[in-house]
Image (cartoon, rainbow, N blue to C red; front, side):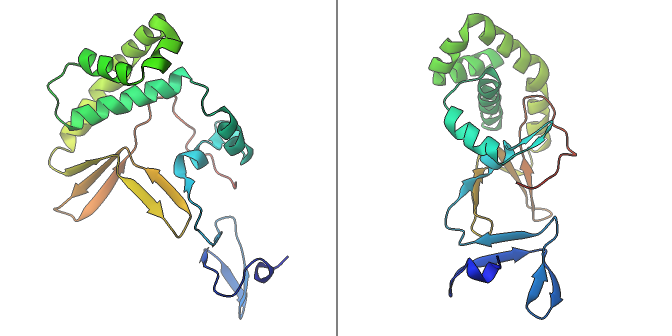
Length: 194
């Protein structure tokens, strides 16, 4: 079925990485993107969750929709680690334990679900594996204008999301996106189509 049968006159269409074979006749490649009427925004995290260590599947999007309220310790650990990043950027005088306890109170039902032993293990893991790196990261970006969790929208691709930290460098007029990952390292060589 040709693309012309899927769209109407005055439809919004974004085309990226297409190869023109003949006049007004294009072919797609593995890197081609076609976005039709991007008025429905998909959360970037939902797309990222479709990519796993052993491959990828668009069906994971629907599975996560069904199971989104099932709490997991990894998700809570990420939330609390993100809270520590935010508080470090805000230059709070609180200790790690005070910040952890505040984050735990903000997520009291999930923390209660996991129990005391899991929360103690989570606290140790965040303090041991992440706190020093976060403090070092924030110190290294201290000269820049830091924005905590700015929201972004891409009408062109139909995406929305939040960035953990955006660092704006005035001297080079550039911006760096900093995303915090507190779980297992992902395979950076994963590729594929959804």
